[in-house]
Image 1: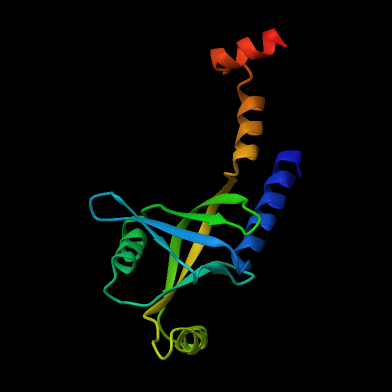
Image 2: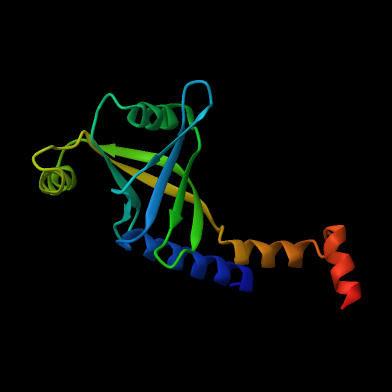
Length: 163
């Protein structure tokens, strides 16, 4: 296994652990029928040990329609995860399933009723991970400086020469 693959696997493991961080901010961004992004805060996004999943409360919600469209027409979805220690990760994912019956659904439905004071859910969406990238500013700066050492703004060059 190459160093790059090992680093990517470590990044994925670190990022996935952030889904179950109670202080994390999670945003799901789908595309509407015109291709416009539809971002929503999604507190139900979590990693269950095998896949990323979320609950959808309303059958008729724009997010539910967009997720259905994503499966039918292979449309991309993005998830932004900001952990409580302020590390940011962008996941590129595909909607893979919408569970609307069975044990997994019943378990989620009962948990949602507790959490939402009696309201159930329409389904449990599961997502296939395509890629993950750390978007924390310090990580992005290091990555860009390593990849493009000559892309420096002129005022930064002037500061370096004057020191």
